[in-house]
Image (tube, rainbow, N blue to C red; front, side):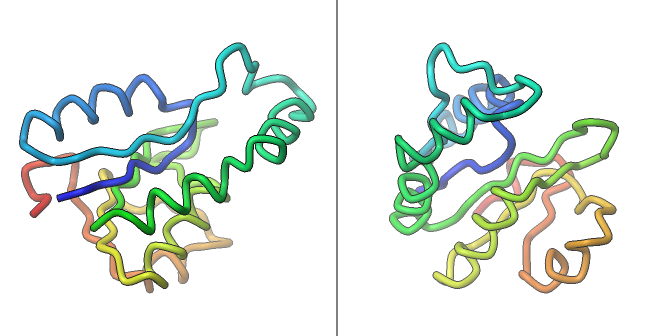
Length: 135
């Protein structure tokens, strides 16, 4: 299966480990782009926003999703939010749903009231941390 990984770039090291595990199971994996030298965590976010615009990162990642069979959302704790799913990842999930792709979520859905109903309506397969459930 061809799978695109989605999630906060803060989880990039975890993405690399998941990439290796999925490849060892015979899957093809597409990763988001981590821009070298960019400080993703600067306070005002202006350089991150400019990089997203100038490199067209959202469209590039949507193209990867479109060419895949499924996405795997890596949702870990971030900023004290357990199983965090951010705005970009939420958009990627909605796009995958619209394009008829399978949506796998590594951990349970977060308790983020502003997107709770929408997350539950996407028909995601919650893996409970078990990558062997990806078929």
